[in-house]
Image (cartoon, rainbow, N blue to C red):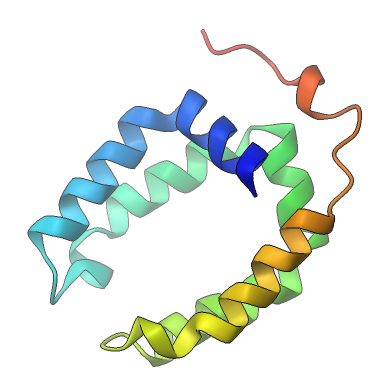
Length: 106
């Protein structure tokens, strides 16, 4: 997960900052108010090979976690077990040969 977060931060910092700012500005309604920013983060990260590999290998775990967040919008703490399973999956993804083959930002 550290590699994925480092890559996301490196290549998508502007998008992450905008999304984070929106979430902070709309604590009760961020799920709907920040959808555009969330999509921009997703679009940015979807082009990176490491992120694509994680999304492929851990799609099931991520889907369970995302569904939990949607069902528990007022209590994200309820989703700690699915989050832990997703993060465990991410840590087990074989990224050898992928991380260094990533395209450089322009």
